[in-house]
Length: 88
Image 1 (spheres, helix red, strand yellow):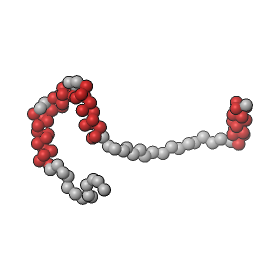
Image 2 (cartoon, one colour):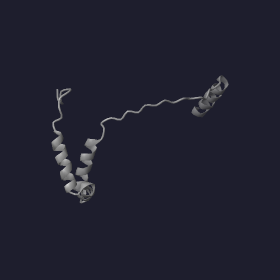
Image 3 (tube, rainbow, N blue to C red):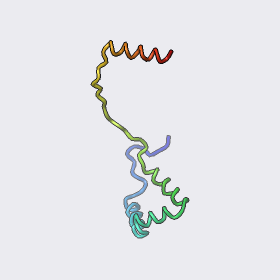
Image 4 (cartoon, rainbow, N blue to C red):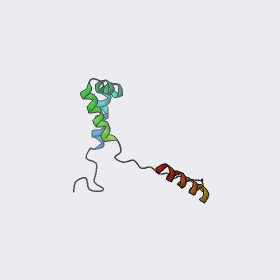
């Protein structure tokens, strides 16, 4: 099976991440990154590929719906009769 074993250390040590961040800032930070990404369609595509890899692979949504309307038997029968008439 692929992937890292549970509990294994990150492949990229903190110092590498810090160095990458320092180089990013020296290259112009966010403004420099924007200028590079906006240079042409190839660099825009590369930016979106990188960005898509940083997005979560799944999003969980938790919620509930409360329905307060009650349908009487007469209303139900009337609704079904109307639907049957439309289908004919």
